[in-house]
Image 1 (cartoon, helix red, strand yellow):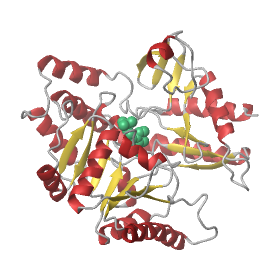
Image 2 (image 1 turned 90 degrees about the horizontal axis):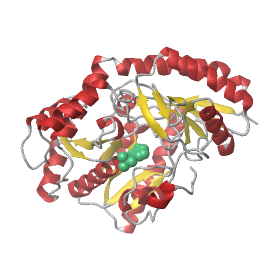
Image 3 (image 1 turned 180 degrees about the vertical axis):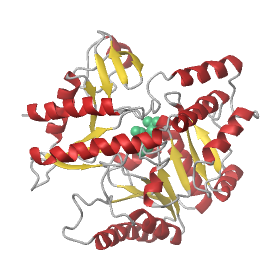
Length: 419
Ligand SMILES: Cc1ncc(COP(=O)(O)O)c(C=O)c1O
């Protein structure tokens, strides 16, 4: 992120930008982006244009619907109703009702409000390295103040586990204990527990491998304690993981799933799907409406995103190309002492950059150096995770094997250049 004293900062202030020297982009097509000078970049970062930049079918549905009608949600629209049916049918059976919004942040707000109204509680548990949005309430989960309404737990991971040398089952039990402790903390504070929110793949935490039964055991504990389970699919959803939803990887179904980012392929579209009971209690008490949400335009484009994912086999592609990339990266892992761990499902890969393989100390500076070197070579990635030392490979899902080979070539070259 950097600041530039220029017309942008004059009129927009210094909101964060990527890279030491920011890129001024002008156009995009498929997995490629072009800056003002005509320089071409392979996009290995953007998950919003899940079907690729400027997909002709997205442009057509956007212009067709905009030419016919766009109006807010307090009228009946078959386009919106049909979209709701289509989207809920992709989720597990209990999630039968859709509430739309405009950003991931808004959808998380809706999810938390639903949990609080349904349970009559206030207490929400989240992870200790999470990001669920930029509003006052959602940002509290990232920077606080956490208590009394929010309590954080150590997110589960097996690369830097809270205790070394344990069997997966025992490690899982230890992480579950963390959640138990926080539920108990709410009880002691007299705050009624409302639920827990996690990203289904802990993307912002650094995409850790975690005990396979963790989410199902956590879900049981939360429900047994009177709370609801919210899984955030803003990063994981819409096929990236090689499944429609990240929660499928853990064989669980939440009570509320939150969606955003790729949902409108760049048009602001987000939403939650939930159970009939939670939806009923929400609509009875919340009187929620949102002027630019659940519109025919959002629904038309959102429906086309789903159609493209299905028609172009993008979920299978994520699994195939993601698997290929991961396998090739694992082959060179031993060549570089700072490539600590390589992980992630489908077309979402994290490379944990460390001081050295033995200490596993996160090396954020080196991660940033690699991101900058790759930018010079025309490849856009980013660094993320609790320590911001995890290289994040998260391209549009139309990434094919030629793109993967180009990326691998540039990654290998960049790794050799790192100081
Ligand atoms: C997991 C997760 N949830 C929610 C959000 C918020 O989404 P938005 O920026 O659309 O408000 C983000 C944004 O990065 C996210 O990563």
